[in-house]
Length: 293
Length: 282
Image (tube, rainbow over all chains, first blue to last red; front, side, top):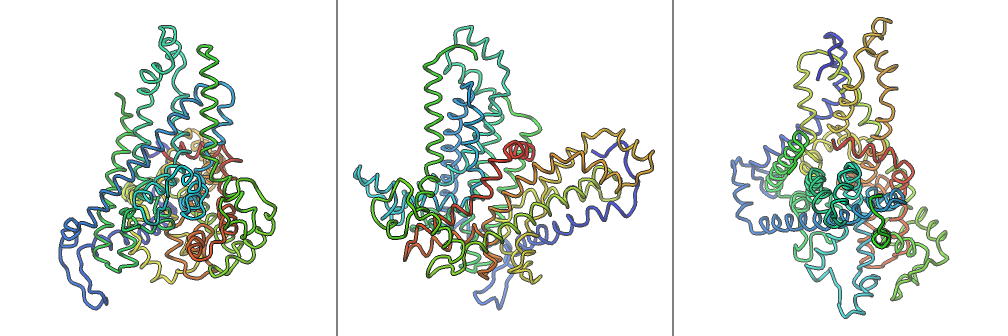
């Protein structure tokens, strides 16, 4: 990865990497090591004494039903977000790939939600589903359903899943469409000549050929649902009602900044770091190998 | 076209239009809400067609804010968001260009060590290390400053990787030629490398601007002073006040303003945006 032709050793390269290395050490590596260290400590509520307890924080976490509950919810949440948003955008991308005219115009109309902040996406949907005023709540009351995500945990979960998936459709659509458009047309033509209809062609040719993209998007969507949806949860439900939408990232924030349980929160951070690192490793292996079935 | 099946083409168009409608519906409702007065916005059912109070709401949102909630107009927060997003985008690009240059073009001790150090940052999103990072920033007296808002988010492995990739595709002969002409490293960097990576820089800028503008958790922690709030974090405060006295017209106008700049960037710089998105993820 070093250029064949390059400059010899001098002080200059050190000065060039210095800004990035300093920021990395001060704001990334040092805080992350602190989190590792703090996860092994227990501090009393006033911060007067700390005790080194090895892995007790982790042990407590894995025996804590609230934490395990939050873990299950996060998995459910990310599966729902990734599944619904990928499914929706896969259908749209397949359609946009079919139409000859206007597929770029559709792309323009479908990709802009990428630029909407998660908290803003949350605000849009919570307004439409407001229990007293929301326009969709009104529509549902016509059909005889009383929507209230402030009381009903399932509805609160549905609300945050919709808001999170809505925003992510743009990203998935863009990658699915690009993957489909890079499939050689001759393959599809050959299948058409052999008499395969559009649906058959989709499942036997297009879908298998875009599987690397699907896999990549799955990892990206899970990372998104795990971490970037904090804004939606924090602004819309605050993890409630009765912790029905308390996902792991929200719990780290809530236990650390609101509950001031530093050791427990740091231990949760460490677990999250482990999750991110394994997801990143999976993603990188994919980049190297390009999964194909 | 592979075969002529007009019926399926019509169905495809219909489904796409339906998809666009589902995606755009929330924005339409938001826009409609931003054009009515607060009296209309508490009557059920809420309107589906725009009203005539757009500019009044715009004026109130920009200059006055919501009653009982954030008392400043949102124009401050838009400015803060703009400064933060620019600092993050420009800062990330600058430090990544320099470090990628050093790693690709120089042989020096600890080169791979530095590379791995940068690589690690890819794996640590701010969400998983908030408390210690907050402590560091607090100790450096950077709370409620633009530096505190942007610097901790600046280090980026993705940008460094992308530039490294770009530099590796630049032919070696260019450096040889530049050397023969007597150019030093920095001259080579500014006169040859920078101009050659222009489109990559622009594409990355688009992505990083959106990333910076949409930051939520970090500004929420670092800013306690109203004058330092960003447009995105202020939405949350407004939703909180909506529990008592919903001024949905103003809240939705703020929402509209908070998403307008990044959305415009995506729509008007679509080519760069798509390039940036696909290349940083590689």
